[in-house]
Length: 114
Length: 108
Image (cartoon, rainbow over all chains, first blue to last red; front, side, top):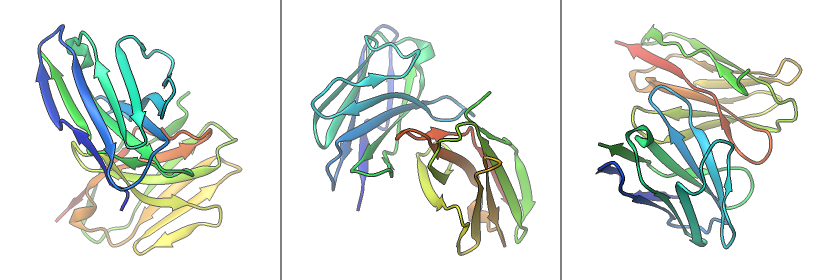
């Protein structure tokens, strides 16, 4: 149980375009989902906390107008990277929390902006 | 100062060796502690929670010292499949804070 999927697993896009990444909890409902970013050889950095039906809470330094988060249902959150630039190339990982402390991670999305 | 600090390694050890990783955290209000394992280009997976009394899961032993704000992970009889990056994770406020990880390579 406690499976989280992400789609796509890998995406290459041109600079200036937008990319949407989906995060789904497959066998549980998640009132809270988290979006992380990980650059090579660095730790996961929390970008934002997404609560179903309300606006996401962004971490300091993360532009909310660039990284649009929508948590429309208890099983789906989306992250849209708008006007992507090469420096946005990274590994984006979501996690979902059914309740309590434990989070379940999706398999990640590797974004390359050319 | 980073919230969670780990020795990045790499640790290269022979099969069967015992290896220990250390981690320190800055937020004394942290209540939950974990070790995650991350394989190359994959998502992190929970290895074990860390309890105040220390806990063991097979070849893995985790210890917590709240006074020193220090967490450790001991791996005994290491296997080739233990090669990965080990992430120390602390939960100070309902969100997980990750260390940058310690890379382990177990050599045949």
